[in-house]
Image 1 (cartoon, rainbow, N blue to C red):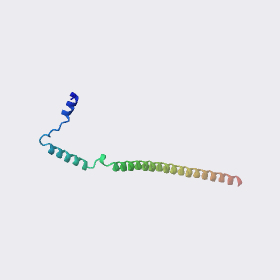
Image 2 (image 1 turned 60 degrees about the vertical axis):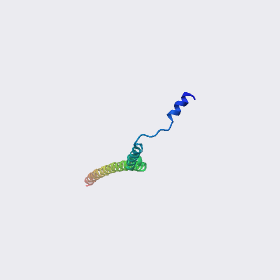
Image 3 (image 1 turned 90 degrees about the vertical axis):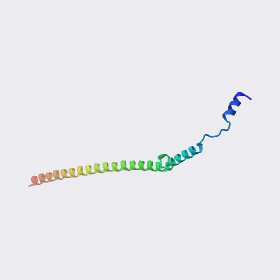
Length: 105
């Protein structure tokens, strides 16, 4: 037999496990089961997706709300400017009317 085959045969031969092997395996399985029972982000992909989507929707809603506030403020400012312009125009019209009446007397 080839030395390589002999070495491989020795490496793959059946050996009896050391004392306490089964207990160590059971203990490790118990620890791993406890770890997987806990809710972790990696074990809850749907929850991660749902929270990500909710976060995106919240950001979009917040930006939209802020945009509406800015537009409303601009509209109020324009409304005030129109009122000032109308008052000025009304005052000028009254002044012109007084001058016309004074000239016609």
